[in-house]
Image 1 (cartoon, chains in turn purple, cyan):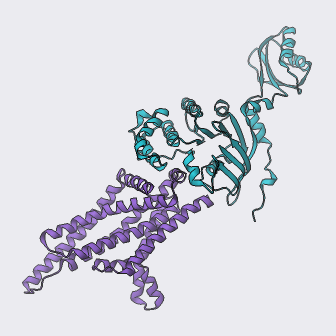
Image 2 (image 1 turned 90 degrees about the vertical axis):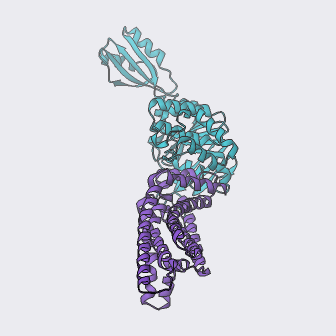
Image 3 (image 1 turned 45 degrees about the vertical axis):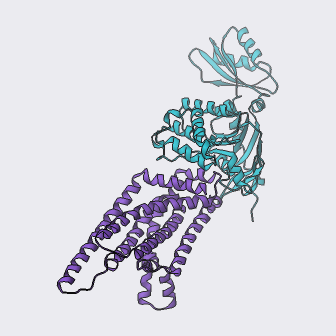
Length: 255
Length: 322
């Protein structure tokens, strides 16, 4: 376990001693800030209009601001995460430092878990920026905190899944661009797979839609924790990490 | 300490190492000598558990590199051809990271880092980012990370490549100073390096071992017949040549490029003849000035070229796998 934290710490250091961490945080802050501003501005305008037309019914901040915001964060995440995961193994393979890791008395699993956790911490620090925005809402309104919590849980699980897949793709190549581009493609596909179910009712279409990452994120943003979704994310993360382990092992045999 | 038996490593298309066997005892420095692409790095990667052997066995301190890789990894320090450093780290934090990886207890890490920095003379660069270090310093950081956990076996892949002559000398001294506590395998294609720092030489060519011997024994191999360089001043080339050919035991005399006023020849002896006294006498008695007389053809370089020149791939290495 100590080795996992050693690797994890090294990964975090690599992100934060290079411009990568700050760039990603800045990009996310900018995009998410814009979404936040749009959502709240629209909410205020809609609220004033409702008051003027005499509707007494209170509007829910959760439904009108937070749920769509978390949905946006999830989509922005799909774009940003490949940028986090692409260097995980590709960089070490290119620079030769993978030889240091693989000839040290630690197991492949410790390397993989450490790297994945390091990338997760990086992702969490990006996500923390959005928590600041959402926190601001608590000053002037009384949103229900429970769907917010499940929403962030969903974002974390989704991030973990994409990072695991991205880590696997990164372990296949020495080239970070290839790792990033292929992860991005997979992310995009996982996102749009859910569209299949909207024009086709056949069982295979349902099965494909089930694989979509967004299908499983939506319940979380509404405050629903469904075992089905938990299982989906947990097995996707495990599959990603498992494939990474196979890929590292195959380096030994293919060379 | 290190034992390799019938090791073969086959890649998809070609055989990188075929059926090699050698041993290294405690405290020995073994030079792994071969041209580029001869299979040195592959052998080292097998020994460090980075690659599994296709056939054969290798063990370090009695632990098999395939079956007990974790135990082997604890006992080796490895410097790959390019030092495995992270440019964004400074020297001290990099070495601390490696120390943790190698399982050094947390309380001892700082002391170990200090010690290896002193040993490799990098303590003045501890807080420098590795990306700012020169090649020589990086190489030293690479050696420092290899010895940080004080492993009984050190495996150094071309530890002096890319260094300037001064740095090469320093690196060799450093390696020599390590030999007492560690068994060292170092690979190189520089012959003088092996002559200077190694007690044993393994010469490898096209994946096969062509010689395993001590440096002294390799020198003796050539002694049976010797080649002598002779340089004479104040004489006609043809005349001298004719005279030299008459000396007993001379097999052939070949003219060399000569400087102004002198003529030079390579004289090859028959077996078991020592030519130098006779040649000197012949020259002096003819009234010429002898300006140079020395035995050549004994450097490891010539032995190496000889051994690797005519060597055909050995047929028994090409066993079909399926």
